[in-house]
Length: 365
Length: 168
Image (cartoon, rainbow over all chains, first blue to last red; front, side):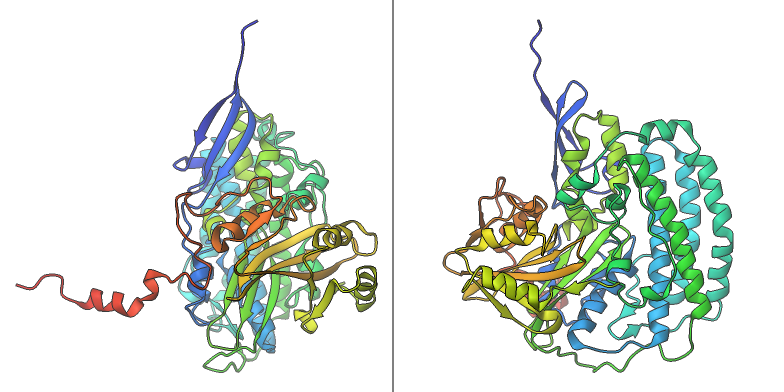
């Protein structure tokens, strides 16, 4: 009998499918993964420390740089946390604009997920199509705040500016085209036999294990656990909208893909309802120029495209926070990597990384 | 239905079960339970497994440097009962060590490593306590208040930038 032994293979940080600078140490038995250890920190900027020397308002642009493909959600989470601390009422119009922007951003983020999944598995066409339509959403953001990625749009007390008159027609046109766009993706990707067999029954994690390792967001829902903070906490005005929470069954790569595709449909429903109900009025509450929240600490969480995004802020009554902590979903979701990758082939690790969808800007903070 | 903070009856029940170990601090959304060191892990275990609490999710774990002591903060959530609770535990600054909750919530792994890395708190009983964001040979713990950013000397840096680089 020949004697066999495992060996380690280093994957990343310069690897196209690690979506940034994630390093994986794979312990392999032949081509099968025995253990996958993630190493992060290549993009660590010390944002939590920087927050301590910035005022509350100055920190908003830094949140853009966490999950930089879903910056609206980061802005929203941070601003709502500060608003919880200073107990302020937000104008109705601002609430609706916030919902429209974060849900549009969810669509943009999931489109990027789909595109990167496609190219990681070798389907270049899928990537090009996804990026084409994500561009439409980014143009909408460009219209409202002049930026495509780092918006700094949602502010403490409301939003930075009112929407221009051409925004609503452009959004409605996008929403009108969206079912057709999705059908195109489904024909191109979902109905693709190669993609199906690459994703189905690989990278399985059941609901119990997923909870154990701290998965949240679409990855947890793909394992059949009904946990969506938009429903659980109904922060902002989410209780006014009618939308479903798509759930998976097996918790495999395929379910994580399908759940996100269905979430985009639900997001488009929310946006349509929000546009229909959008009231007139001010877009910014009266917020003191110099913000001095009362001493205390507060934790607030929202549902970002990648999972539960939480902010913990300790105020000492001065203009700068005493401590700011960000609970980043991508960071904690990476704990599932080892569990999910066990027994897979290296090629499937690429698929798992694409469907877990960690974003290094957020992992490293 | 939106989630609720753990009801005061449930808190009194827990306090009766562990007299003198749990005190309430804060009000409203800032309400938290401060747990004494001696029974910490037992109480955390009860919070997860007892049918009256069922805190199956460790939502967030972090720590704050208050100069004379460190405070570790846990935000728990129960999927079944839809309630939340904030738990706090303290340790003195000269002996920065606290029990690891990894045996109760495996998801504490990365978050405890992060706190260890950035604040230098030791989690007793953690299976794999290493730095996670900073390189292994990094000295110091940046999120401690005593750690000053060299860039915090920003004025000096700006002056340096404004200075002409080359004078003929």
